[in-house]
Image 1 (cartoon, rainbow, N blue to C red):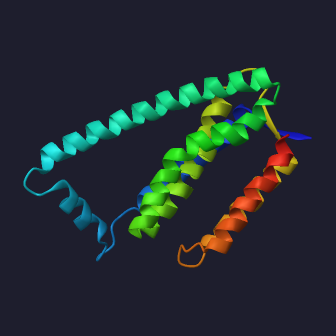
Image 2 (image 1 turned 90 degrees about the vertical axis):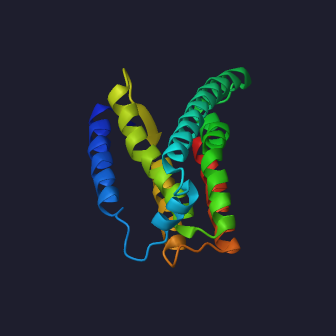
Image 3 (image 1 turned 180 degrees about the horizontal axis):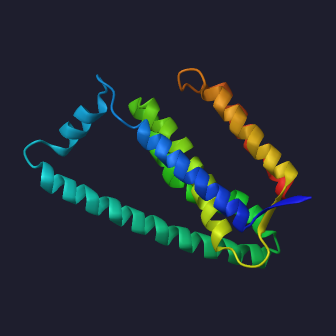
Length: 196
């Protein structure tokens, strides 16, 4: 028996996305003594703050446009490769496309780790996965036509187990040792046979 990502699941995920966003916004208020507002002000520069904000906004929009364009090229190229190699599209999606679309988060995570900013690191990794799983799943489910996208229970169980493992690893002070990082990587590799 398989679980389908149809309109009912899409609607449930949309409600979950709205609830998660509301919860994140509620908890996003800066606490007294939080260094982030001062860091942002220092980065933008008090003397030319408005011009710097406009410039950073434009850079953000250009980066987003490049990311969307790259994702489109990666998706179409990955589907073409899957067709030529006679490989299941799910395998390409779980490997090539998953790695390609995760590179922005990976580079951001590496930079955050090098700067010692654990909150940004965890927020980037977990936030992107939360958005992809909940909001992305809602869009796919609500806009789908015909037969809904399906995953077997072993894949869903593996996803839940890896998410639980990641939570356990990050539970203590947002620290991940090299051994734990290796364990997470091995867990990812072990899920690949489930989709072949």
